[in-house]
Image (tube, rainbow, N blue to C red; front, side):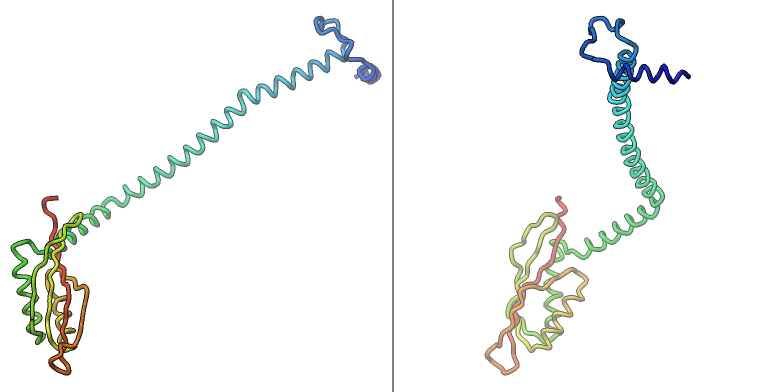
Length: 206
């Protein structure tokens, strides 16, 4: 390699006045100017190629990688469900059986008088005296009908506790609300017990 020639071209490039170039006739430029122009054009071509192709391809690759991750997660979730399908079917059957049992604990219209009789029997077996027990207007909810029962009894504290336990042991679902206990005014130990019992009926029409 002729280093002296390269040195001479470099010195000529440093001393060259680029303002004197004829932009309409690049062929007349001296070699140093042509070299600089070629390097500049090469850099521009590389940058343009990167922006036009490589950057778009990089974004597309990132999008595909994200999609691959989403598909992988979906596949894993479906594979888990498929692997556990027998267990899920068994759980569904058990839930349906439990739901059927719960529905069986909800009285129908024809069973409500019998339920009132059961409540009365539990109270009398607990030595309570019933002043009144009456069925109030039913309350229709989204999936069921609520049947409130107003109960007014008299007895002592322990008898009332026995009655509450007896109602909780009924085969039908009965809940007790709005307890009110006050002296009955007749005896030293006597109490008046007001309570709102609620049972429920499934809305078969829905």
